Structures are given as structure tokens and as C-alpha cells.
Image (cartoon, rainbow, N blue to C red; front, side, top):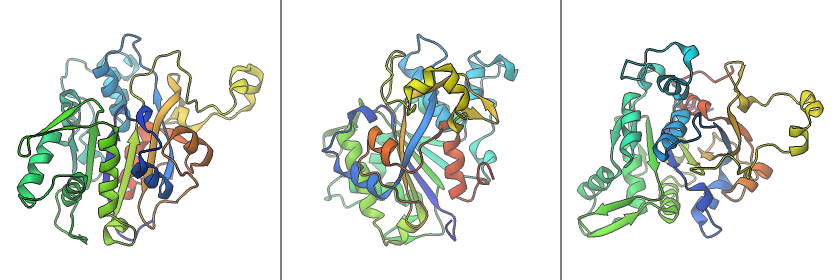
Length: 329
């Protein structure tokens, strides 16, 4: 535990997990120094789920608003929520986590609207580019390092120092692999594919390098999801022994895994395959494990965290910011 509250940066690659290759060295380097594991997800309640529905379902779990959102859609009637209320019946993030100030950058309008309803200060990713051009040398190059510097500036990290006057405690980036960003000043089109994502992670680590003041106060999370997955695709399974999982007698002897439960209740809709991949790092705070590559197999065999329910992610981050008690304590 740090002697001062951290400030958090979360970069979420929505659909990037299946695109990582051995060539993406920044991601693998980050995994080698981070604490790695999985975030389990729920199955979609509707087999005809659209891509926008999937994006909201998954980010709602990351922000622990899934149950409320599902009830608003008419799936969790036991919560007895008034669906005529257009606002999500969940307190703003600042109310839930001791005045936590949170920002989100995304170029997906439906995700931005959802996050805004949860109390995030929402901006388009293109606005981040404009901020960078307004603050850097006009003759300088726009690159991943510039993005990293701008993100960290919002958290009060500037020129290697930790400022006491800053804008946000948490900055969350939502990135899809199929979006194009227009850098109008330089006349360029920037693709937010896995190569962009890889360089972005490298840019942040380059600023928050080990031994720096920034590294000791920045809690950095990189989350990758697989995007749309068919129900019949059982690859990347969290079940270590498929025979035990299908044999009813052996299944009775195996304790229920914590990633399948919430509030002491067993969740019937957990998807046991294609979880989100997560790597987290803060110097002197997170425990380094044996994972060396940012991939499912390495996380399962050598990662230190195994799987937790995606709904618990935000609480774990808020705890590092001294904005929530330790979950389970």
C-alpha cells in the first residue's frame, strides 16, 4: 500500500485482445513488469445482441453498472427499477467513491453517453488531439509520447513532478480498433488499431519510467477485450480442467470460483471463456508476477491474479486512490 493516494490511468482496448502479436513489444514489456490476470464477463442476455449493445454491456461491467443497465433493458426485473426514468438509477461516480473526479475519452457516442450518465466528464478522443496541439511545440511531432504526456497532465503529472493542483483522479480511455482519428493540423488520419494501442502504452511507460516520481503515484491499468464472441467459441477458457467442469460428480467437489459470484450470490450468466485481459502496474505497489507476454496463455500460466469479476475492477482501482475500502475487507 502506498503512503499517498494514487492517481489512475485506464486504457481499455475494446476488441484489441485478439489482435496482439509477438511484434507488439510495448505491450509485452508492460506485462513483464505488471500484475496480470483476467476480468470475467457475463453472457449477453439477448442472442441477437448488436455491436453497440455489446460495447455497453462490457463497459457497464467495468464500471459496475451492469445490473442496473440490464434492469433498465428489462432483463433483471427482480431489481424493481422504474424503466420510465431515462437516467440510470445508479449514483454518480463521485457519490460512490468519495468525490472521485473521473474523465473518459472515447469516440464511440453511445459509450460516451453511458459514461456521462454515470458522472464521468466525457470528451471525444479527437478533443485530446486538439489539446495536445494547443500545448506542444507547434513544430514538434505528434506521437504516442505526446498523448501520454497529455493524459498524465490531466492527472497532475508534469515534467516528472507530481502536482497538488490537478483535474482528475481517474482518466479512462476507451479505444476501438476500427476508428480513424483526424489530425487536421498535420493532415493525417490516425488509425486506433493494435499498433496505435501498443505505441500508446509504450508512450505512457516512457513518461512514467521506473524510479520516477510519476511511477510511484500512477496506477496504470491496461485492459483488452476480445470484442464480439460467438456462443459456440469456447477458446481461451478460464476452466483449467474441462473434464471436471462437465462431470457433475466432480463439479460438486470443486469450490465455487469467486469470479462467478457477486454479493454472495452465484451468477448464472458468467461467460467462462474469452475474459478481458488486464495488466496493472504501479512501482512499489503492484506485485510483479512471472508473465512475460500480453496474451491469454501467459496470463493463465504465469499471471498472479487469475480471474475476478469485471464488476469489481472499478472498486479495486478506487481503493488504490483511497476512494473506497478494500473489497472483501
